[in-house]
Length: 481
Figure 1 (cartoon, rainbow, N blue to C red):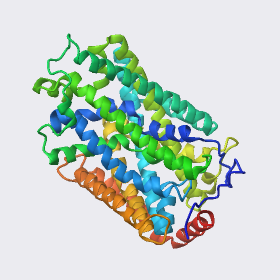
Figure 2 (figure 1 turned 60 degrees about the vertical axis):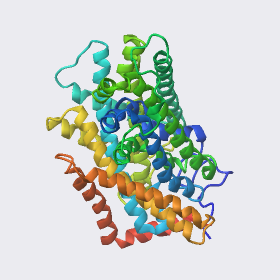
Figure 3 (figure 1 turned 180 degrees about the horizontal axis):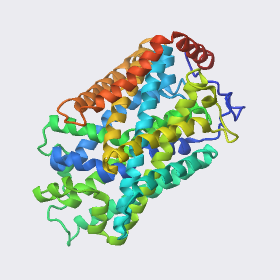
């Protein structure tokens, strides 16, 4: 019977493959939170939602929160029994078989790589915004300089001891969260006070559908769901965590729940901060960076500068998280026989440095390719985010299917729990359909790109069954007692 399965033993601080087991709950949570980039999400993701649902933006994030919990169940439940640096690769492989694991892992690798390119674009967006708040501009080839600098910083941080890196991410993430919470509290207090910039007051109706149709809310919840993208990245540290069977699932749940309450609170403050009348909703939907707007209106220009600086640093932290997760997944795949053997080795700090070099090189090629093609940093952000999301839905779906099969098999998980990943799978299917229906070029091309990536992984499995056999042998040896 499958149960509590990994190569981990409390007596050994180093895994069989040389990864150091030193990370606790907060360090693993930091990677997931850092990947999600709450400041980026709160500065950008509510704008499009306001266009669809009006003042019901906070309610929409509550719906997205529920959908994310349904999807996260599969990861949280399965990591109680399976621990492996390969994340979806191992979770799907251990429950559905090695070929399904490889396919899911390959899709997740595309998610991480495209998200790394997307976040590099976000770094450029926020760097430009930061300069604008400081009254400065850069001309000429600044768009080349920023990706190169942030990639170098990500390389520097990720090739050090993972304990140090994750603690830095934790500090940066909490700095951004504290700044947003302070801003949100001030907005709510001023809106509810005798002298308010808006006339609609603290409108609790924004926590309800408020006249928005459920079809619009469900469609908008897809964009809210993207704010949690990368919550599972902490699973890539499964072989570097202390007591991973307890640490990893708790860290994932903590990251999802923390983000859920934070996002709802911040979006409530932003919605009432703009005002819930027609003019306020139009201002919200037409904003370029809501956190900067709120800072200027409710605190002052100096706080807007501070927020813009923090947003850039948080974007950098998110890049560090995404490239760390991608490198560890590539490491796990190469270690099991896919790709050059050197990608499956670690450096003296226990970090898969060669895999990291490849991830960063591909990220720069993707970003600079669009820049050289005449696109701006905002296109880099949104285009690669869309492709990454489509790959992510496939990867998450494989894990949900694995959780369903594990629950209905002779496992320690009660069979009735299968209903949760079934609902999560339904939500993922809805997310995928929203990305396909009603889109216009170039967004109509992105499902093709994501499909080609995932199909490549499927072709590898079909034409190289021996590879799947080797992966299966390793998973059996490491994941079963």
